[in-house]
Amino acid sequence: MESTRNKLIQLLAANSEQYISGQLLSDQLKISRSAIWKHMKELEKDGYQIEGKSNKGYRIISYPDKLSENTVRWGLETDWIGKNIIHKESTTSTQHIAHDEARNGAAHGTIIIADEQTKGKGRMNRSWFSTKGKGMWLSIILRPEIAPQQAPQLTLLTATVLADVLQSYCNVKPLIKWPNDILLNNKKTAGILTEMQAEQDIINYIVIGIGLNVNQSTLELSEEIRHKATSLYIETEKENSINALIQEILMTFEKSYDQYIKNGFPDIKQKWESYGFKIGEEITIKTIKDHFHATFLGIEEDGALRIKRTDGSIQRLYSAEIDWFDK
Ligand code: BT5
Image (tube, helix red, strand yellow):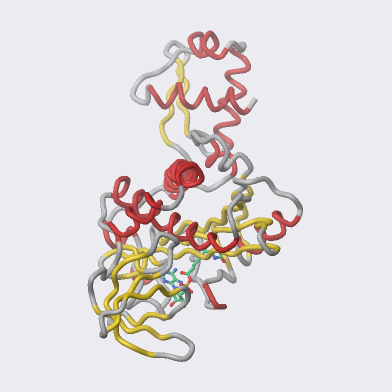
């Protein structure tokens, strides 16, 4: 049923300017013309606007931009990610749902999306503003066969995926601020929260949460973050389809993840550094017991932060807060 609909949309989408006759659709999909008509009615219920003319056939006039399991699934060309989609109009946090689902056995690649989060989470109990219908609030459940200490690499991988999609699909110039912020014009447009459930050397599951500001105007960003946050709309003056962005991100994520599992971290490291914010520049590092200046050199093969101290020594840091000297 679903794959027939998928094909139907593909056929209609491939000829968006022209009408396709019911007979042709019926031949291609090997179903009756009345079954085609029923599918069209279903599509309309999901927000597709379809024009049907008795002597010409059918044509899609507009796609729905509302989020739903179906609108994300249609046209999503992936092997394992997004095969199971959970959509909520409003929820506390997609991370909460993801943890519940993962504990109950949800498959690798399950995704949770929401139009709005009332308690969106950042790292270390910080909050994440998730305006209704204006951004992408997405969690991905993964069950990777990697060691728990490698999990932070997945945050870095996710950052490169977001940067790639923003650059190629939205034509902007993103930078990645270690470890998990995506910047446009030095302002944060996306954040990543990686949470893990592991035992000793086995990962039970990982949830990667991605928040991406898409269609907010400046006034629609919370006042608290307005000076340091931005959205794709603010940067490009163009509205973007959140559905289409989710699909692009999932397709790029799947490719990149599969390559990472096959080839390890080196390619990701290289890509990450090509987007790295303030590489080669001076930063201030705060660890639990220390506070010092250093040059930011990039990241290590294992994802740690690589810095040069003022005495010339090179160090790797696994957890540190950085003062970037910006605002
Ligand atoms: C992050 O934390 O950047 C991780 C954000 C992850 C959000 C996603 S949305 C889907 C999934 N479900 C969730 O509940 N969470 C994930 P952190 O590096 O700690 O940054 C948090 C800080 O970013 C806050 O303290 C604010 O200063 C700022 N901030 C909050 N909301 C923002 C927004 N919408 N845009 C830009 N900056 C924001």
